[in-house]
Length: 124
Image 1 (cartoon, rainbow, N blue to C red):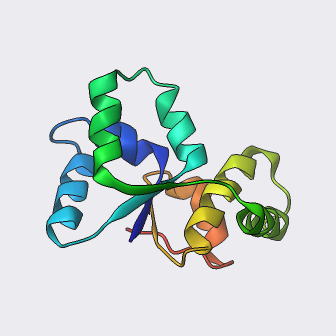
Image 2: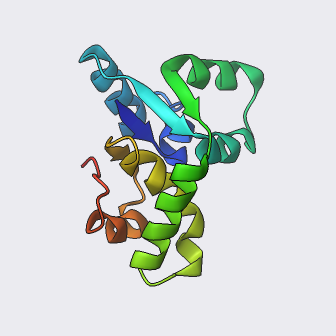
């Protein structure tokens, strides 16, 4: 199971992009995908049309809500990295991955690498 960041949903729609190609390879290898509700929200803010939304939704096994345990994990991560305000939403996304012990697929490694020391697995 792989947790997808918003950039994988957006660029997954672009034929020939690195993200689209990687999603196909992972899928062919039997991987399943999910997205945190926060990522789904960012994706839906678009611009995307209904066909693009349907395509991405059909790719994912689940969209997981932010529940109490994830909120606690996000706060733990946020506090562990020194309460950097610009990474509050990223802490929520990272918590969705760490709470399910799943790697995060993102092309925004600069922001997410700070969470790796606190349990986040990042896909290369």
